[in-house]
Structure formats: C-alpha cells, structure tokens
Length: 153
Image (cartoon, rainbow, N blue to C red; front, side, top):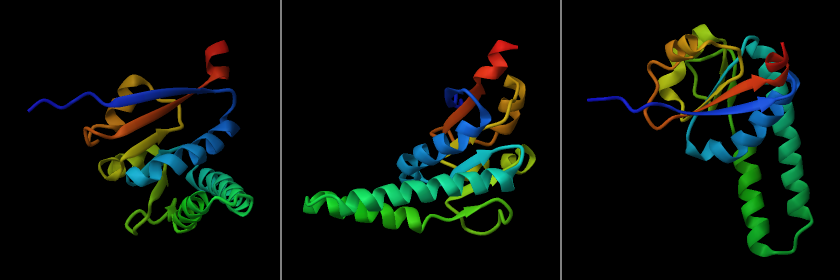
C-alpha cells in the first residue's frame, strides 16, 4: 500500500513574532478538524504567545456577539467562543488530553500521528521535515513557516 504524499502548505512571514498570531487565527478554523501540533524551538514561550493571541481572538468574538442583533449570528458566535474557551493547550504534559500540543521537534515526532494539523515553525531541511513527519496520517495538513529574513541572506 503506497502512502500518499503529505499536503504541505508553505506560509511566508516577515518575522518570527508573526507566527503565533498566524497559528492562532488558523487554529480558530482548523480546531474542528481535530488535534493540532505546533513544532517550535521553545515550546513554553511559543505556547504563551499563542494563548495570548487566542485570548484576543476570543475577546473579538465576544465583541462581535455583543454588537449583532442577528439571532443566528449571535448563536454561531456564542458557540465558537465557547469552543475556543474550552480548547486545551499543553507544552509539557504530552500524555494528557489536549487539543493543541506545542513541542520541540524531538517530542513532536512522537505526536505527529495524533494531529490533524501540524504547524512547523522551525527551520528544517527537507530531510528533517520528512523525518519529523514519518508517522503522519495521510490526511494531515502540514503548514510550514518560512521567514522572509531567511530568503534575504
């Protein structure tokens, strides 16, 4: 049985500080698909930044909810905010249940088979990426970040 090639989307960002916001915005859409894995160099710091952006998005949804009179839109926004508030993140306890795992590459390789979306926010060679994703499910979406600064050097 042949394994399908992974779906890899490349996103170019100007600076590493843009990545947490991009991940949080994307997670807002992708979290319904299943668990997510974020591969980064410093998981604790990345988790803190992603959760900060996540909280800002929840506040934006709550403001949109308060500013609309459309009953169906209010219900949709309320459900989305509730789902986001109940989303579990972890960067330390990979054995516990979580919706989003944030891990360094060595730990991320062990979690790849559980994720529906994988964010690769570290510079990896193609062989390094292939090694990281070797246990990946065929329908998993991989989002790989490239920094514009890397292209200029």
